[in-house]
Length: 247
Image (cartoon, rainbow, N blue to C red):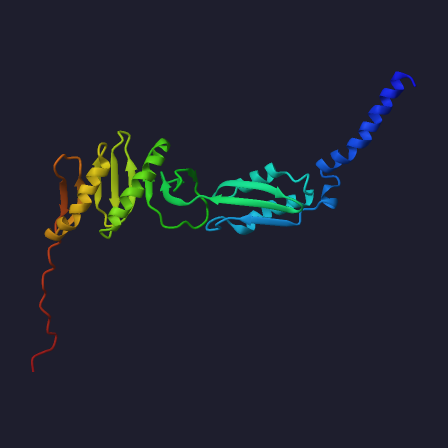
């Protein structure tokens, strides 16, 4: 047999043998012979919409076990609100396994985005949001603010207060606003120590002064500068008017 005919025959045999594999990998027969029957999703579903997860993943199952596009599924799920990251894999013979990790919201970030407990900044969902404090700062300061909040919030809760606003200025100075309206300027240095010292004395300060404390400057080595709001003057007592005519 001429060499050319042997070469062509060999190529034809290879093409015939390869055709089933190509067909499976491209989903031509994969969906019919190796269908995906089960979708197994693991997620907290505290914020992620469960129905949207299934709607994004289910259409891909028809492609079959060998042809299902894991990257495409991952991309669709990653685009859902509240999703931090996704893990997608197949399990023989017919199962698609999806594990979703949600953002755990910590604060509103710069009025336009959300800050997660993990330190990640993400877009603000259009759904109803839980009541959260407001953080302001540079994106590179996000992790520092998460760490500071984790230390400071329990201290204030111990005296019946909570942080409602937290910010870092361009000069890296910390400012805190509390749930009773008290504003604290902490400064740049030794923020943890200054705050701990102030919180320890706060109950005593409030107990000994009837006026409302509205501002505290903690940027002093051995004390604080406190600003008080004067007590409102009591309303004058007006004697009752007798509208009856004398008998």
